[in-house]
Length: 226
Image (cartoon, rainbow, N blue to C red):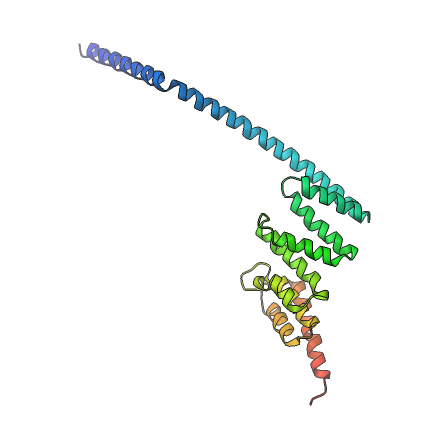
């Protein structure tokens, strides 16, 4: 008898659940179908977008390599034109890489002013990632050493010459070189000593800094007293 009662109760519960499901479907079935369709369309859209992005980035990569090949062949003007086109029409990271490489080629051509302006434009572009902007600032500053003054160079890179900044070593070097070029040997010495005294300074940067410190020390030793 107990088994019959349990069986009856189970049947009633199943019937109730079926009725509840039917009621929910009648009330929300249309919404559920719409949501399911949207999920499917969203998935299709994402797959299509990923395919388009990857294909476009791959094509941009090929264009970038082609431009580098032109540069290696000393076809500089053609390379710059190709890089400018990639900057305008490229995808992924290639437009900003094209901007940086085009600026480098302009410097190699001897058009230093245009190269500095191009690097500064990258450095000031908020849409570019911070490390790339800092690298562009450094490139501009190095080019400014010969033609600019210390204040102009410092405006570009002095904020990076602080402890903890991963680019501090190069920033200190360019500041030291700019000060040395300007004849401010005391300031140059302080920047080069900061490089030598930093245990994390790359060996090549520290070696150049020590060499210039030695040159300045030898100059002081050869300067007549009084």
